Length: 258
Image (cartoon, rainbow, N blue to C red; front, side, top):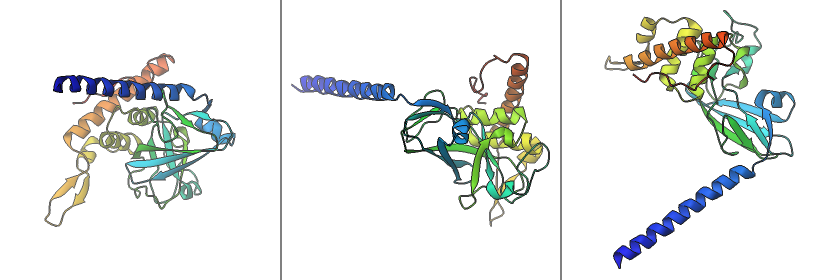
């Protein structure tokens, strides 16, 4: 009797699981939104976008669909979040457009993201008509020496080229968005590329000094090895893309996980 009940229970569970999958698939197929690119839709006043930093490592992107049609929004593989007040001070050093202000700009990517408005495929984010969707994204700081991003400072989401033309830095942000590198290792790579910090300087960077004299470092040897591998991979990809515009798409290859 017990084995019969077990078989019946497994059968019911299997049917329920299959039913839930079918429902999810049909829900995905039912979404027939207009396909738009995020920044183009922002320019056309089809969407409103907010970027709210939680801290230096994470932010929330809020997308409001202002139209009466569902939208399937192509999210940027790489983006920059720039403090609104900082932009009022004009351009900064190097090739960066952040400029003055006390808080760091932040970079990241949304190549693999989905969220409340509907899970997207291939970097698409589904938001219903006159609805709001939210995405949590991992980020890295891009202006070493300034204060960390925080939710009290207003930030604006922009194409990453509004901040930098450094192709390798852009590629590292894509890797982070495509979940090919962890946030801590990506931060080391980003500061190396955006601010010229050497690997020795990054290895010596102290995060917390404890009262007992102990120190917690920003990066350990594993993080720095992964960061170095990411920088080398970013350099290879950007060189390949310059030689062949149809070369392997960003984020397709994993960074070595040593």
